[in-house]
Image (cartoon, rainbow, N blue to C red; front, side):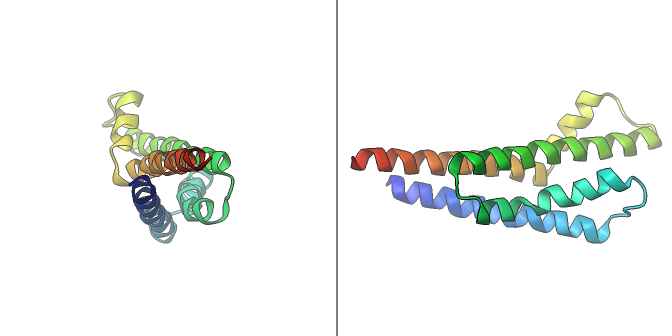
Length: 133
C-alpha cells in the first residue's frame, strides 16, 4: 500500500514539475523582458528549473531543499512583479494582499505541492526501507 502511495505521489510531483516548467517556458516566450530584466528573467528561469531538479538531483534532502527554494523563489519573484504591476496601475491594497493573491495562483500552488508530494513520497520510501531491516 505504501509503495503505491509513494509511487502516486512521485508521479503527481512529476506532472506538476512539468506544469511548472512549461509555465516558466511560456512566460519566457510571452513576457516583455525589457520592463524589469532581472526579475523577469528570474520569473522565467526559476520555474523552468523545476523539472531539472526532479530529474537530476538524487540526494533526497537536497531535492526537497531545491524544490522548496524553487517554490519560495518563484513566490517571491512573482509577488514582486505583481506588486510592481499593481503599484503602477494604482490598485494595490497591501503587500500581504499581493503575496496572498500570488500564493493562490495555480503555478505557485503547484510549486508548493511538489515540495509536499516529494516529501511524502520520500517519507514513505524511507519508512519502507526501515521496515525491511
